[in-house]
Length: 178
Image 1: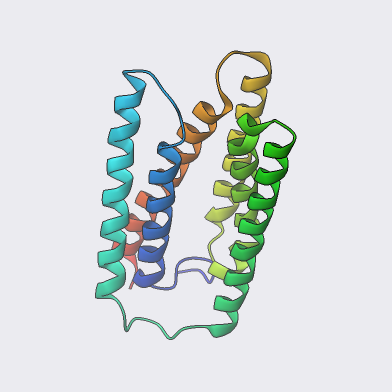
Image 2: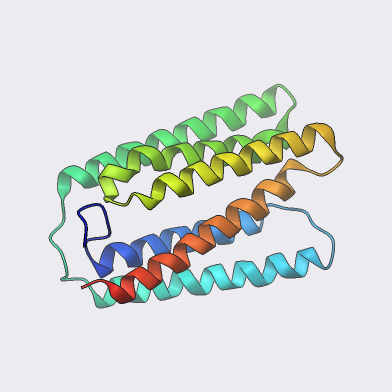
């Protein structure tokens, strides 16, 4: 296993847990009509199940690896910066009357936060996930600007699918991890 891959089942389980939860949240963003609404509910349920399976993997692998306190601190700082940027940006967009673009901003910030996480989590696939989320944010922005389709529909569905896909991939990687 290369140095830049999950080092343990626990790390893979945590990725599935976190990204499964956030996929569930993203699937709840779009205001969609049937049948898309039903598909988003099913996808949200699948993401939640993925998160629960990730939690089980974490619970069963508690003693796998010693904690890296320095990496934990870097992770926390990156996530705090992400939440601060997304929160401040959302407030600013709301103040200027562009609330419909909040999901675009948040998706872009989420995508960007994966780039500095690559060395912290030792997972080069996060480059692809981050880039794909940024593309989804851009697609949502362009769609909202040139059509009557809401940015939240594009971004919520796209981000949810990407995060769910990555969470499932993390579970597959957990099955292969030592």
